[in-house]
Image (cartoon, rainbow, N blue to C red; front, side, top):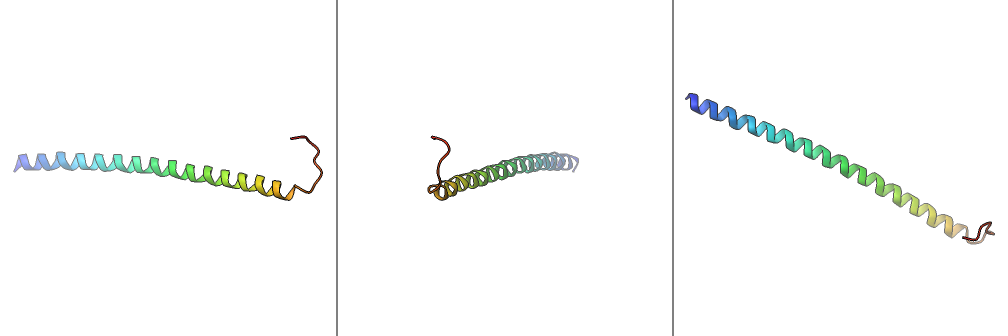
Length: 66
């Protein structure tokens, strides 16, 4: 009975450690995913702004050559 208790204690401890590691990895991946979503949204907004400015600014006189 003592051997079974020690075995269950070791297996339970390993499962808890593996679970904690997976939670940490999952949190890290969620943080990376959120950062990529925010960067992508910022790039979309910047591209849309430049495109709209270009489309609306075609009829104005240009003060620069580029």
